Length: 246
View 1 (spheres, rainbow, N blue to C red):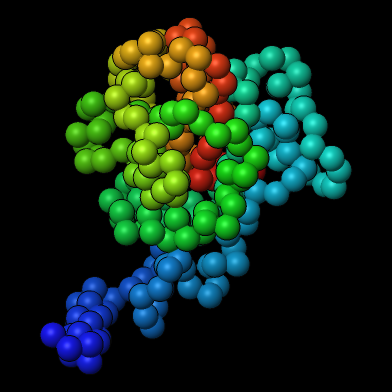
View 2: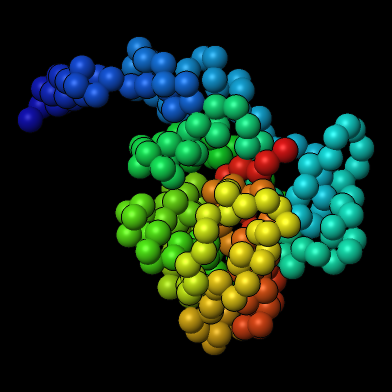
């Protein structure tokens, strides 16, 4: 097929796609004039706020107002088991709808848009180079219900340069528990007691590990994972999430 015919075929296929599957904003659902990346309308896109300093030098908790990065109260008390945690965006506004659409609405086409948003940094430049990238796992029952693990899909889409380091078999969720989103902060830690297990300590010992998840709220889930990684002898444990609650 000649280049001109290839271009025509592509244009026709694109027109059919727009007709049969009209593009909609991942945030508000508004109809878009064309498919584009990221898939947000002109009103929603400015609402997506990168997580900027100042924030805690360990857990990444954002601080209000200007100033230098420093330790938050929880990290001063030694409550965070991570060596470092960073997030790309603030979990608010249209980004909440977009992430929920991925998790609960199976809108996996959102992954391409998230990857475009993260491409210009996304907090990753502040993290040490990992030896392993471990998506936070779902319990097998919830994985069957959802059909995919959003943490794993985000890792593959947003961290393409570390895709060869992703291991979904080393960290397993062994106890089914109520979703963290339905629990108050005080109960989240108890809900995750002995919820995770390392399947091969030999693969983790002495390694630098990067945990990946969609949203960081209290940090209880990432802390529970970090606890097991510490037991297995991980050298350094960092975490990256697409978003974090303000």
